[in-house]
Image (cartoon, rainbow, N blue to C red; front, side, top):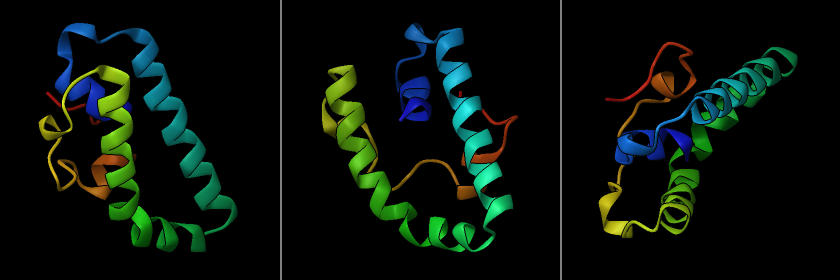
Length: 87
């Protein structure tokens, strides 16, 4: 959700958002190291989870749901890449 907020509300970007994105990426990477099969599951449920995330981002930002694309605008790899931040 924070990647969506980062992309669609650039005027509100903050260090707190950057930290949250970094922290969650680290948590996922650690979980994948502890249990490699979770990465397969992650990719399987990714699209379904994104649909929930769109709604959450809409509610939290107050932006209409239609602002957020039906298909996730970032790849699975970009989502996990600690150096990736959308413009």
